[in-house]
Amino acid sequence: MSIEIDRVNKRFGDFVAVDNISLSLNNGDLTALLGPSGSGKTTLLRIIAGLEQPDSGRIRFHGQDTTDLHVSDRGVGFVFQHYALFKHMSVFENVAYGLTVKPRSQRPSKAEIRKKVMHLLEMVQLDWTAERLPSQLSGGQRQRIALARALAVEPKVLLLDEPFGALDAKVRAELRRWLRRLHDEIHVTSVFVTHDQEEALEVSDRVIVMNHGRVEQDGSPEDVYDTPANPFVYQFLGNVNLFHARVRDGVAQIGQFRIPAPEYAGQGESPAIAYVRPHDIEVLGAANDESLHTRIDLVSVVGPTVRLELQADDSSQTVHVEMSRGRFRELGLVQGGDAWIRPMNSRVFLEDGALGAH
Image (tube, rainbow, N blue to C red; front, side, top):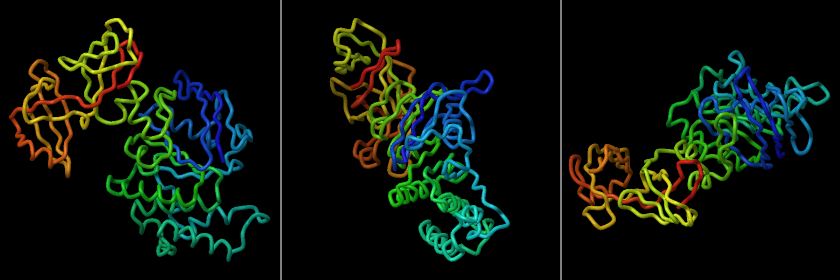
């Protein structure tokens, strides 16, 4: 089931929630709508679902115009941040609910319902909870039951709104991996909303980055992380260092560093910003012609990773660096000591908004 979003707009008073968005979401893909609060991602999801009506534009499922169809006629399944399970019903009854309320002519037999519900509970690895109440389950387990309930009615489209937002970090990470494996098994066209960059990059086939009701970038997780379309995407997708630069005729100058920028060939001298991720800065144990001297202000060890805050001699800017513990030990670095750095990979944007990459 492919989903076509055709020039959709939605306002709430003076606030533009969705600003003329057109997208085609591929059949069988797991697509993330990623963005900060107020970016329009949840409103767009609700328009796809039929919970909100667009002011203009159309929604089509597999070529069929569903814009004016009632939510119950669209064949969508939902999973919300707050599980929304019926507290007085057992796990089995919660998962079976969508099947038991179908019109009599479409309703499976009790035996068929039982077989299907138990199969779904096995799929989400919770068949042993069938007779329990939701209050007897953990948050992560309740969310898996909510997903089983959404899948019971065999939706054409599965929509997930911050599905793991109410859970702690460890459970979130486990459920992300579990959702990816489950999706690879069932291949239902799925769209999920998140503000968590790591979640979007890890789980999805495709990431749509939104801001102020518009699409900033649309591509594979690798595309949006490795080649951000603009400064907003770069800064939203993880930590980044910003360096003032000058660009002239295919070369970007960051202090003493000269970085080829062939996309600016013929460019007159212009101010620019170079974006460098913390793991893209090499730390050296001694000076060389292309290195910058810094002082190590802070060392933080986070599992296998060491994070450094460095102070450059010629500016008040703090430079953030990430490296392996092995490399940190090898260099003999200490807080308060010296380190020499150089950017290994950067992306340069002209300050007037034009972009380039390196």
